[in-house]
Structures are given as structure tokens and as C-alpha cells.
Length: 241
Image (cartoon, rainbow, N blue to C red; front, side):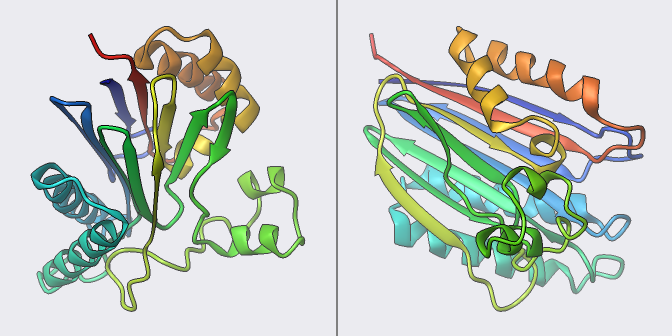
């Protein structure tokens, strides 16, 4: 089994980029992918996202985690961010994070906040993470539709992030097989590219890069001036040699 991926991040209309992306592929069908979206504006959100991404990447590369070990890595990332909040100027920094580890025929993922993971398998694209936001709770409660999530006034009100206690990440795992594909993305991306379009562009794509480029063309036509940072990671699982 081969794993291929493409990573992209952009500061958008902001003066600096608080997103971080990490991609690693190894032998024996292994891959680790992390995306984090720092919070705090000038409160060093980019530091928080980089710290969390490095902890999650290094932990998953060192040893392919199971579901419980992924949760433990998120706890470690939370402690790391909180330790660095003691540095003057970094007191308010926090970050979302989504992480995916693929080893042989198993995919394990975890997340905090509203950075998302989608998976395509068996002809179906599904959102595998639930946003930890006030808006997503409104959707689950039937107050708004799924499409309303992208435009609701409370979408930036996050209920769980790294850099704050209590730390309550979510994690899960499943089998994966050649033909599967994954997308990790920050809210600055998914607010403007919809699930049906993600699937349509995937079905036309030959590589993770062409999939990403097709979606980014949609994104650039829709974002307003001064838009948020946006990032994505696309992953293909393919037959081995």
C-alpha cells in the first residue's frame, strides 16, 4: 500500500499565518498528517499551532498510535502549549488540531476544535470529525442546517481547543484500503468549499495535488477581502508496487 499526499497553507488576507501543516510518509504504507489552526491573533497563535503540530507528528512517527494513544498525544500537545503560555506575550495562545496516522491497513485520527477530517471510501465522502463549536452544536440540535454551519455567526466560538483545560480530544480508528482518500482542512478552507464539491473534484483528480488545486480554484473565487488563513492536506491511499 502506498500513501501520497499534498500540503498547502496560505495566510489569506491576514498579515501573518497562524496555521501549521505537517506531512510525513514512510515505508510499509505509513503516513502521518497534522493540521492546526492557531488562535489569538497577535497572541502567538502560530506558535501554539506549531508546537501542537510538532508534538502530534513526532509522536505518531515514533510509533503508530491506536485510538487511546492518539488521545494521549493530544493531551501531551495540550500540556506543551500550556507550558509555553508562561512566556510573556504567549499567555492567550491556543490552537485547534486534526491529526491522521495511517499504518498498513489502519487509519487513526484525532481532533480538537473545528479543523476537519473528511474521508472518501466505498464511493462515499464523509466528515469524520465533529466541530467543537457553538455553531455545530446548534446544527446537531436541529436549530440550523448543515449548510448554515459555514455562515452562522457563532462558528468561531469554539468549545474545545488545545491550550486550555479540561482537554477533551476525540479520536477514532477504522480500516483503510487502496482507493480511500482523506482531506484535512482548517475552517478558512471548509467555509468556502462544500462537501459535494470536494467529492466532485476528488472524482476527477489523478493525484492529491490535482485534487487540492481544483478545490483551491473554487476557494479563491469565493473568499472575501481580508479572509482568514486557510490550509489543507490531501491524502491518497493506493495499491503498493
